Image (cartoon, rainbow, N blue to C red):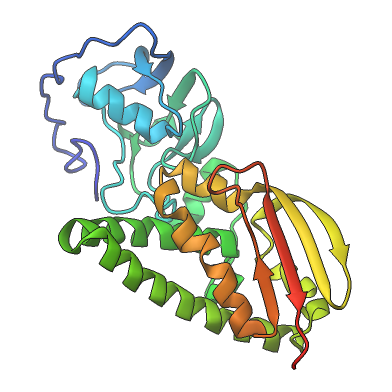
Length: 304
């Protein structure tokens, strides 16, 4: 059970001196993080302590706690995601500004108040006694949902996020070990092969491989485009401009912009090869690369 300094229910939290505070430049934005503090073994009642935390773009509530632990107070206790950070295990669920949420997945936008879900079951600070999943959901005020047993029931955007959090560190490690050119060549080859298989499955799922069938398939993988404009839609041509992409936002949120194009945008051309080789995609820019919109143009080419 990965935690910050919580080793068992009866053993006291070890105290250590905080890491030496570094001087923070004046231009860095600071936020206030108010944290519930309580050790039943020594404290008569709970209290709150407020810390100054240096704000970083893309920081999560877990990141704010990491900053406190590393720079301000090494005695603070909370569930650390050394083995997860994917929002799957749910151990870091807490009340964030009064609302239940996952510390590792909740983005920081300003000052925070962090509390345990149930103050009566606190082992120390934000760490509670382990509870069955159904009880944890009840404490959080969430209805219990049936477990997902079919991967196809998982939204594609979530699947891409899980893939990215696993694949990106591996790709970066291979770049350091074997070089960027060779690593990206191999990774790109694998990703394109998977995209072709996906294109074939899309044709089967939609019952055909025309542009009209492809437009219907957009509901399956179209969780990424959040705002798009259709320029043209005929049996021979489909043209859209995508102004906001949730895939790009997800990669940026995790600091993975450098591999976002490889893992996501790079699939598009190979996917069309699998769906129907006679449908050609052209694109000159993407939101992932910093453009204001993706210019997606599909053309159905007749056989000569």
